[in-house]
Length: 199
Image (cartoon, rainbow, N blue to C red; front, side, top):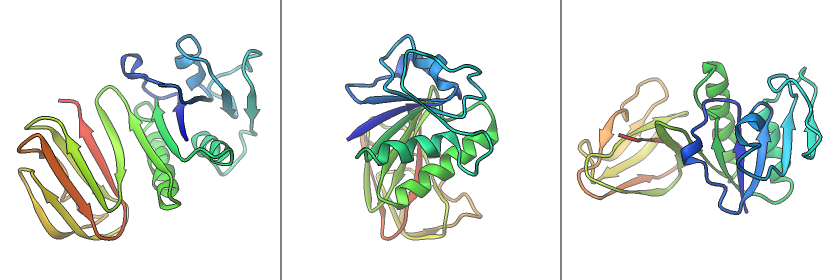
C-alpha cells in the first residue's frame, strides 16, 4: 500500500499528487498540505509546526528523541501495512534534515520498503537489482552509494558502466545522462541512490 508523506522542507505544490494514497503530514509539513489534501495523520513532535491542530488525528512525540519525525512517520504507517512511501518536502531547507531523511530512507529500503522523494528540482529513488529510466535523451541523473556497491551496470547512458564498483567515498556516478529514451541500471547486490534531475 502507498503512503504520501509531506515534510517541512522545500515543497513543490505543482508536483504534489496523493492519487488516492494515505496522506501523512510530518510536523511542519502540515502547513504545506492542509489546504490541498485530506490529511489522515499528523505525526511528529510539532516543534516546527508550533501548534496542535484539532481537525486531524495527531500522533505527538517528545522533542527529546533519537528518531526523526520522518522516521517515526514511516514506522507508524509501516505498522499499518504500508510499504511504499513518496516523500514531499523531504529535501531542501536544513541540510542536516535532508541528510537525515536520506539516511532514514536508505535504512527503510534495506528492510524492503520502497521510498522516493519528489521536489521541484529532482526525484530521488533507491535502486536494488534493476531499474529503468524512461524519458528522453539527455536526461541527467546521478548514482550514489551509501556503502561500497559492486556489480553496477549502466546501459544507455553517456557514461556506461560494466560490473563497476561505486564507493561511498568517491562520486563516480555523478552527472550522467541518457543517450536515448531508455536507460537501464543494474545492481548485483546492494542499494544505490538514484537522483533524476528535472532539466
